[in-house]
Image 1 (cartoon, rainbow, N blue to C red):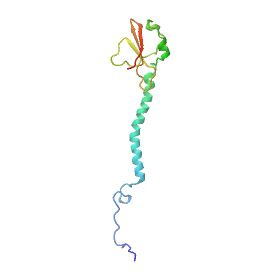
Image 2: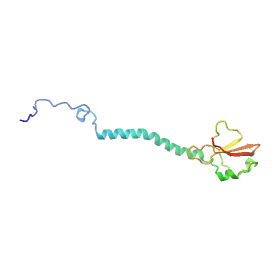
Image 3: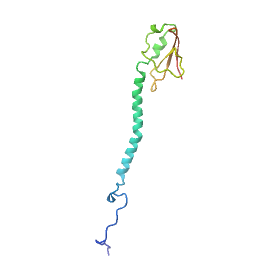
Image 4: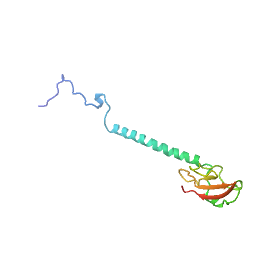
Length: 133
């Protein structure tokens, strides 16, 4: 014989966490949402850092790039005002740099660190060198 529930008995309560109990459904959709949220939480800072570095680089290097050919053609002993091909501005001087030297980059990516150092005494170029610091 089949045992049917008595219609007068109340139904069993729904398990905790189920949609019927008023909680959030636990399942594949909820796990996907958690994964998506985690990816956004971890991916957003990485993406923002990458975007900012790509924006920073052109701003940091505009007007500071001295190409190798121009650097090699700069004659030592010539007055600063007579040097042809120097960029309109310099990169930031490294800590402890000599005040009579100018620093330019070769456009190295991503940090645009100083690459070329030109030193002047009495307004004349006395030395030029690659900086590998």
